[in-house]
Length: 376
Ligand SMILES: Cc1ncc(COP(=O)(O)O)c(C=O)c1O
Image (tube, rainbow, N blue to C red; front, side, top):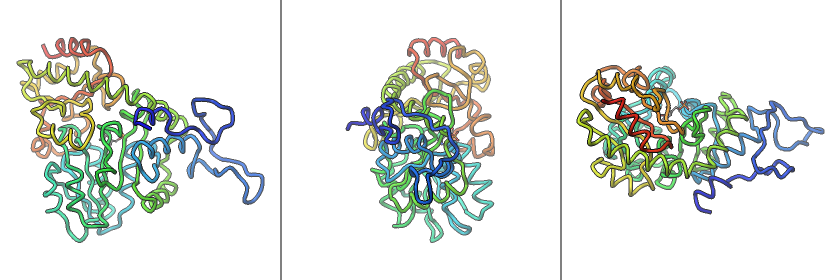
């Protein structure tokens, strides 16, 4: 089955008997049994729920994982990943991560005795240089949020000793464009809030482990800590994934048109989009994946221009998040990365002149016309 078909047909609901084409929502917290030892395999929805299981099977199929675990948000998924580690353990992470992941590592994981070291993930050798005997995992976001830096996943894997878990946050490209497990990752992480659900109407997260052994360790953490994906949200993810292929293609085509247009605008200084030949990781992106996605970061001539654009945009919504049908604009310095100290933000290029666009599936010309008004 090809990927587009898998998106539509990945998990026919095996538990229902009505023939419904859309999997039903099992809005039940608990499941009755006829007697000891009987039952349909479900006990209590924190442990497993048929609708969540349906969405998990879809994600396992799309990423070719041994299993997939659905969580209430991307951060709940990353928190469960962090629970794999004990005091004294170390994690190496790329230094340009979603601000929430940095907050989790700095204020929660560190408090629990897990140390996190940040490296420039664009060079695999930087990861290797940071390895110590305490290193238990490497956490890579590729491309990164918001600077769109790319890591060569296979090159990092090649330099890691056996037993060091390689986790890749694949939120920006989704399994439609990138399959990190095939490149040597051990766990794929998703904020399914973004492209997978795809309509800016739900929060969801997934961990997709490569092996049954890792899956079992994560299942224990999931059912114990309880940040599980609710049935209705699982339904929305499963429904969103059915149109993943068409949405990713349309948003990507729009993003290329917008990036090419932005590049010609005198007020715009730097445009970062993986699909532009001048992006440093353009060739690597083609080699390790199947597409460039629809995230663009760009700097303008002044902080005033950047701030004015946020209120002048009409069609484009000034809102957090990404990966939905609507084009969204954000200001990373005061939104996603507000908790990162200013000096660190500046070192990573997250200045007060940086804007981030999540290009949606509207007509490209309407997006461009709105940007023209916002940046005039
Ligand atoms: C790359 C990335 N990972 C993880 C998350 C966290 O996901 P959620 O907001 O669903 O908790 C986000 C959210 O913006 C993100 O952009």
